[in-house]
Amino acid sequence: MKNRLVLLAIACLTFFCACNNVPQQEEESTAPECLLEEFYYSTTEIAPHFNIIWNIRAAIPKAGQDVATDLIRQQLIKRVFSYEGHIANTDDPQQAMEMYVNHTNTVHTQQASGEAMPDYSESISLSMTSITDIMITFVLSTEGYYGGAHGSHENYYLVFDRRTGLQLTDNDIWGNVTKSETKEMLVKALTRYANANNIDMGEFMIDNLGPNNNFYFANDSIYYTYNPYEIAPYCYGQQTIGIAIKDVKGCHLD
Image 1 (cartoon, one colour):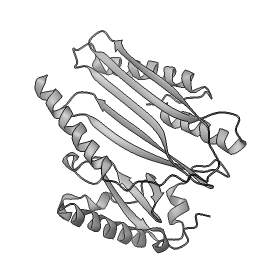
Image 2 (tube, one colour):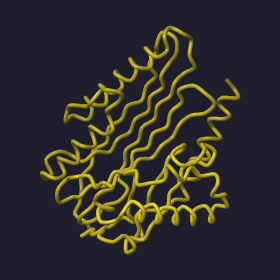
Image 3 (cartoon, helix red, strand yellow):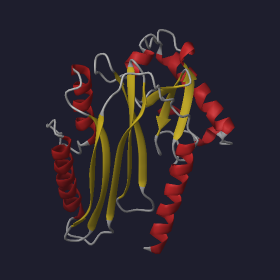
Image 4 (spheres, one colour):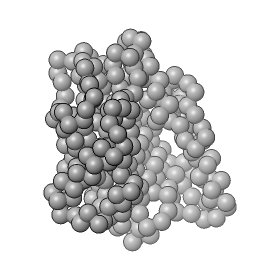
């Protein structure tokens, strides 16, 4: 137990340091306001053979601001509180959160199959990271321990068009770029990242490198985030690589 806690602490520290090194998004103070409401859930669920420690904090746009914002709200609720076959089919974040927790507890309990298990932990955070006249960006951060040598941690960036309420995807960025051109640009960006962090390119799984719908915009660039195991071993943590928007032909963000 002591060794597991030490490993988990080291993993969390590594993740914290990695997150502090990624390019930060600039808040646009002149952008139209988007009112948010926060939802919390923190408890320890007592299961027959183990406990599940929950910590959830989600900042979600308030309903009734405008049609596009209401659509963003609905998509965020569904994205954050859906899990392994359970879809959050409600516009009430509090209800969606409680349904998500109940479903996840049931799944974990079934997976335990009556065996004694270490305590699970599940932390979820949704926050707004930037806002402009035309875009609003959220980051969904998850951390958890489900047994094994270490915990898990991921960041997922969600960028929405404030005019339509639709989430931006890779197709909006790379629609006019061939797969080979896309690959070449991402490899160059990863090479810059590797050189800056003294990592041998041989450590990366280049075949897995590609657009993954996990991006945000900052400093006139698009930044792709790859969570542990996506393109590199767990020990290298999260990678965030940037490409100048001007280098991506056909990418219009106005």
